[in-house]
Length: 605
Image (tube, rainbow, N blue to C red; front, side, top):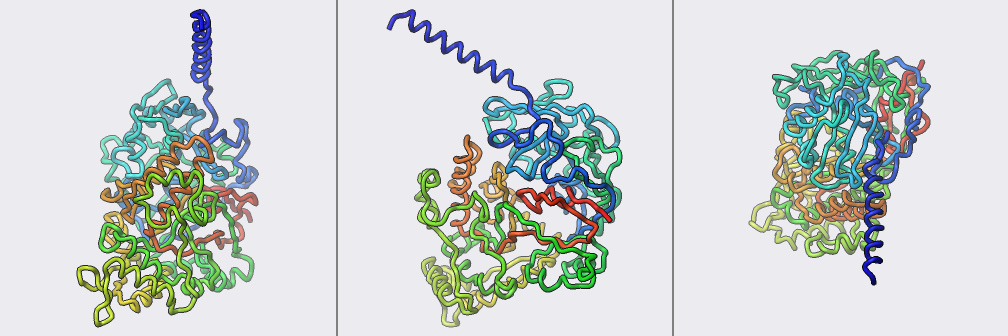
């Protein structure tokens, strides 16, 4: 080949690279961003598809919560905070649509722009964005919020911040975050951090703040009043800066949101029957059928609504702390799962009406498939074949009983597993550990978790018959939080809602840092290189097919790890409410989830 031909070919390659580079450099800021592909809504959308843009404004909603609170700052580890404040009383640069798996639209930011490989993300603030005191939101406020939350805020903010190598102002209203490595999801996560007013917190220890300072935010609602541990009232700000945004149209319709706190669920339900609270979520199908026939329901003053959803079941059940013996042995965990007679318990408490959680992502496209792992899922798991729990590659299903109290077949299997793990039965019928001590462990619950206490009572009978000595302990909310933050338990009730867009938060749930780092959601203390690798595969996926395969592979690792004794999940949400509270006919794919009640509800006589 002649030199001239080589030169012409080189010139064409250079030209192509110049065109590509110019294309990247000229990439225009967007009104939204999706994990894969483009946002479903165009730049000129008028409202979120599940919001009613013609909804009237006014009225109030009164919700009930079991427990107490001693802080109004949901962005630090210290204290107990009404969980709703994190979502209702704060805003972020981008807002989430709950009718798409993971898509954000501009909120405080009017545009978002990313690098070609999402190695950086840049936001441009809306010029009209204001805090509730009327002062403008500035880039300085944004940078301070991100650094403060990422260093002294709640641990859930630390992971993403550690991956930011540079945060800088790039214009009068623009700010850019550069990442240590490209990450498709990190650009979206960064867009969802709450923005606080820097000037309010100068000279204050942010990590120790509680009830002494009501945060100034940009949200549609402001805290109007509270009594520690008793109630909090949010008032819709008539001067809210973003009330005309398409993203906000048809949302935040209620003038007042009041959260009442009760000592236990029974007292709260009586308050609902008496009209002291105006909406109540029911998690028990049996109670839904049996307890909601009081006069207000019969007269039509209270309406029973069932809201379907298409989101994963998440994990609901009793988690075993592998930091403590003997729960570090998968055979012991499997044995305890076999002793849990789900079919009998479900029949007793729910008339058998609720489906069991069969995996962490059950009820969704991300759930592990039955039988052996195949295709891309098997390829992802194969490098970890020697360390994976039994069933991860070959297939796994939860044990099923015949529904009788005796549960003979599963009890025999449980005792066989204990024997394989070195346990023996002494002459008094007690199950002994390999060290020769009777197997004894504590099941910890909050005092308010009466529904789960009924499950524990039945489970304890089965454990006792198998020669185990369980101890059932209930503590108040403050002690429970303190103990679970420090992983000071053997077994306790665990619930972790999961989404259709798993990503970096999975490391907080299942990552190895949670083995020793307090306050994470890795209550089971799992340390699995395979799980870490599957999370990385989720984050690095370039196509939806690769993403789904990685999620299904992670689901296999989690489920076959046998960390949790799963119970049931709710395929629909059951909400009883006064008839004046309405919601749109169009239900988002997430159903009754964050962003539904009270966000898109309204009050109408």
